[in-house]
Image 1 (spheres, rainbow, N blue to C red):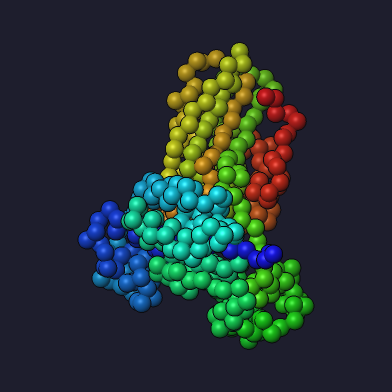
Image 2: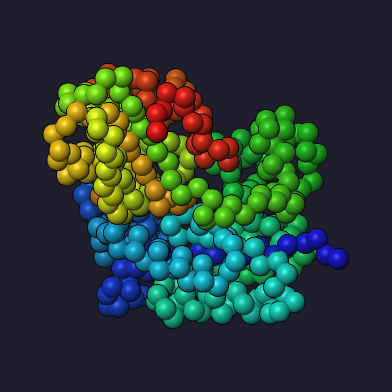
Length: 406
C-alpha cells in the first residue's frame, strides 16, 4: 500500500487586485496597484501588468509610481478583502474534509485517497473552476506529495496555475530553481547562500547536509530536506486554534477608569503582538466584563483582518464603552481575538505608511529580543504583569493561570 500523500496548495492570484477587478470590470487587463496612496505609502499588491516594470508588493508607492506611471492606484478596502476571503474559505470547506488556511489568500488540503473515488487532478481543476465561477476570483493550485513542493509549484505555474509534480520528480523539478524559491529562505539566508556561490537548488541537492548545517545552523537541515522535496510539514486544520484571549481578575473590585483603561490597552497590545509573532490575523474582537455581583456580559464586533495595535486598541476601547452601562464595581475584564487565520501585516498596507510598517517591525524586534515588556504604551505601564511567556501558536494547549478566577 502506498504511503505517499497528495497535498494541494491553493493561492488566489494577486488577491487584492482580483478583488478590485471583481468590483469594477473596467480594471481588467490594466496595470493596477493596491496600497497606500501617499508618497509614504506601501504597495500591498500589484497586477501582473505592472510587474514587468519592476513593481512588487512591499515597495514604496513613490518608487512604484515612478516605475509604472500609467498604473491605476487604488487604496483598497480591508473589509471587502476579508469578506471575499471568507467566500473562498466556505467553498473549500464544503469540498474537502480538512484544510489549512495559511493566510487570507492561501490554503492547503490533503487529498490523499481521493483517487479511489475521483481523479485528484480532476477534482483540483473542478475546485479551481468552482471558486472562479462563484467568486470571480482566479486561484492557482500546485499538487505534489508535500506542502513545500506544492507551494513552489503554484508559484512557478502562476497565474491560474494547474501544476502537478508527479511522485519521484520532485528533485528534478526543484533543481533548476533559485534557492530563494524555498519557503523559509529570507533575504539574510539568501545572501549567505549567494556568498557561498549557491544560487540554484541543484547545488544544495549536491551538498552534504552537514555543510548546510554548519553555515545555517538548525535551519540548514530543514532547507536541505526541502531542496530534496522530502520535507513533510503537516496540514494544520483551519479549526485548530480559533482564538487568543487574556483576562484579569482584580484583587479588589474597581471602578477606577484610568486603571481599567490601562489594563485594556495592555491586553490588546499584548494580544496584537502575539498575533504578529505567530503570523496571525484576527477578524473578530470581544470584550468581557464581570461585575461585583458576578453578572458577566460581553460584546463582540467583526473587523477586517488585522494584527495592528492602532486598529485593535481603539476597537477594544469602543466595545468597553458600549458594554459598561451598569456603573457597578468591576471584578474582571477580558479581551478575546477570534476568527484567526494565518497571514502577515500586509492586509493593512493600504491604510498605512512605510513609517507605520517600520515602527511595528522595530517594536516587535525589540520585544522579540528583550521581552514583551521592554517597550510599552504609556497607558499600559501600570499593567506590567499582562503578557505571555511563550508563543500561543506553537501547538501547545494554552496555559491556564492559577490566579484567573472563572
